[in-house]
Length: 413
Figure 1 (cartoon, helix red, strand yellow):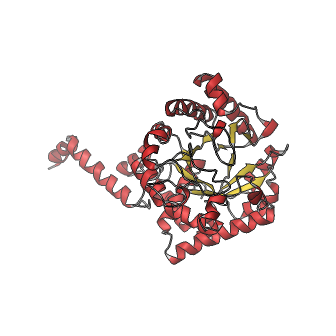
Figure 2 (tube, one colour; figure 1 turned 30 degrees about the vertical axis):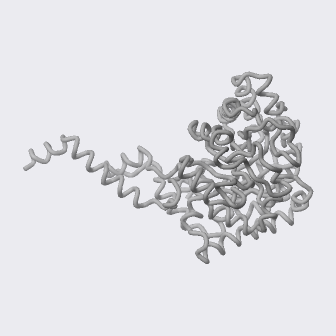
Figure 3 (tube, helix red, strand yellow; figure 1 turned 60 degrees about the vertical axis):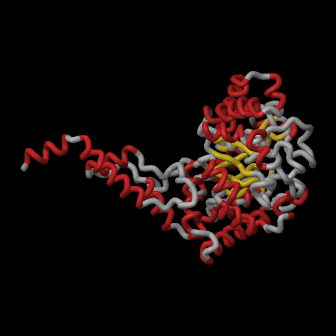
């Protein structure tokens, strides 16, 4: 009998069957929304699989355990992680109350305060969960950190006057300077394919786009993103599924992208390339997509869960464009309701106040920001309690946010 047992364990088929059974057990622990592809943190790590097979304690908690920890958080704490809070002119200290609520991130808008590094350090010390600190550093006229980091040309000028490796190198230098300030996320590069004038009230892109040619836009956009990642800054490619050639600027009012059938070859290729390259985060546009959505893509299940998650198999972080922008209000959504619609549709993090139009700038006082965050959190909690938003979708979004921040909630217990 003992000889027969040893013989069976030498058989590779015995090991394959045992590992398959363990994999099924690990999968059963997960809480990922079945309507969307699993989050980047869902598969069990090799170390976790090995420890289970050998019946010894794992040196680090499994993703299943992390999901269980998050499920114990109050709903309001989970909801707050999905909100990026705008800080006008880098005045982060004015947002102490919002940070105490557990906001997921801070978005530096306008210009940057000279003591931004110290303000960020103070905010991170006060935060229960590390904050995602974001800024728009595209180049040209969209550079929020001012003299604190190097200036880059408009993306279109970069593509016309620099090689792709030179752009990658410049982005790496920029990212190192951003990291030294404590800024960990760049809401760039723009992957929209556009050759028109602008940016303007009629065209959101213009010189923010690297090129009117999809291949060139892909090459230079991915080079820029690669440089950011080299120096430890998370790039957010935008504006999915492509704003090039749109009918208007969504900052001020409603707009349509090119028809969905046209976007397949004219606008989507750079985003497909970005997903293939493993880029970690994508921002979804506020424009409607004829043939795909009836309203803003940022609020559309067809655009986010259907196209981005399922068809294109993107498993990273999904952010919205500003949900207080003109296109959103024109569609009949107040900020809290838009936030619920976006998270329900498959987004993981919501932004507001970021267009710096007159209407949005008026909302950026600390009191208005605090009231907006409270309203968003209450709306998300209410949506879960009413069954309108599945708790599994809320938890999935939190997992994506924490994964993008590199936060291990199990280790912090």
